[in-house]
Length: 232
Image (cartoon, rainbow, N blue to C red; front, side, top):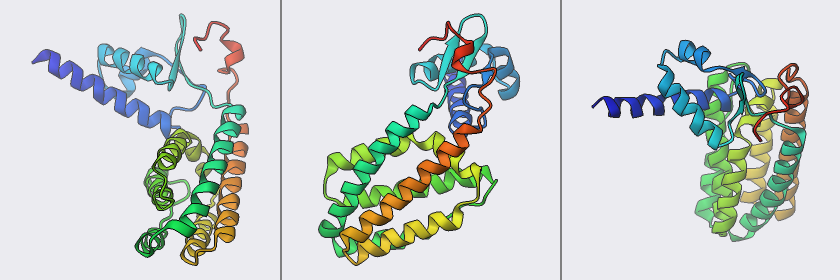
């Protein structure tokens, strides 16, 4: 029984720390120690240690010898590469969806377009991003290419943490709702060119928000350059 409890607490610690990393409550570049986390999350040192070990394996934190852990940095190169991939994948997806989607799929996409978030309400960000992921997932499904669906889902998941940064940078709720509405409308009209234009604008705006937010991050003094022994 004690062993079961320990595993359960480790899982709980892993989930709450990961959530705080993804939502940027624990900021990229932030130095965190085990003792600090035990106090913050009211969990013993062993579950925290096991949670950090798993998060390190998944790339969410990195070990800093003699200091603890650092929340993994988000680099401009990371953002540029992932957004390049997103642009390629989603451009292909919307063009195929415009011609291959069933009428029922297009109705579903239009039905799911009415979602938004509240600026500076971080809890609403997570809900919004869940709806956003599902919206783009449905478009990918409508492309009729299952491999493309998997790649788009993976790419959006990789962007989840930077999406939170972008949402908190400025209030873009109305702008994003309009982007989604125009995209859904273009698909319902089976206008592949208009759909491509809409997704290009949406992805470009998202990338710009994220890059601007990234430039404001207080990496100093917790930037990679200050940790020559950082495990990469």
